[in-house]
Image 1: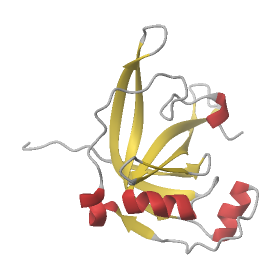
Image 2 (image 1 turned 180 degrees about the vertical axis):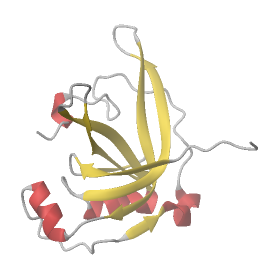
Image 3 (image 1 turned 180 degrees about the horizontal axis):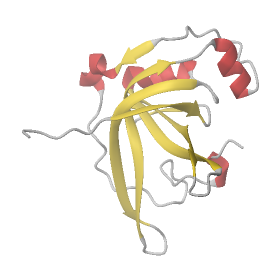
Length: 167
């Protein structure tokens, strides 16, 4: 095979509203968690459910759209790539976290479904099915950050904590 592929496709629900921030150069970046569910039967035939949490990062125009239209509980399609970060925590242990760098997002489901899942109405009326392909604005996307990952103190990129879980 001539090349390799780093591609992730997820359909899940937002665990929290996106956090929209800007880099010092003014580039928008949105971060949010996404939950995907799996149901299966174990060896004894008992039904088991498992939820996997994913950290999503969107840049540029896609970040602005995520910040404007996505809310906790919203069902979305995310397409992107996986990126790992390694650092040492305060105890000197080597830590690794993974995040999905979103390149495309599509809102799924009806507005009523997302409002029910979020538990409240936001008052906005985003169009279901709005799509943003980050490839169109790829020139504005900064390269992957090269600075060392921050310590866990006051970090935006810390591990998932109990506060990140929506229930």
